[in-house]
Length: 134
Image (cartoon, rainbow, N blue to C red):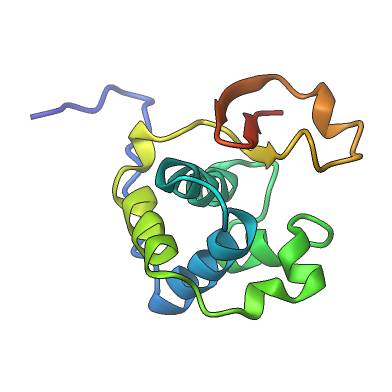
């Protein structure tokens, strides 16, 4: 088995509530509607990475609802029923978080006018989204 070295923190994933899974699936559905399955998993992983990051709020709900972070929250598209694929992608992201992307941001370079986000180092490109970290 794995041993934890002194000073190393063992991170045991908190169980994610069904409400949070639903919120994440609705976000993924709205943000990554036309994207491949892998792209949907990566969007969900970005949310989980933000929860783990000291730069962002500590819960899935707070991360998703943070002001001006995800356009589906402000434009209401987050309220649409998520696809089965979006739900599966969220479950996979939760199960495999350590193996997923390390990104805390994603954007479509063809669809954003946000100059700041384009300055972030892109760590991977999946479908139409660039995945970046700050």
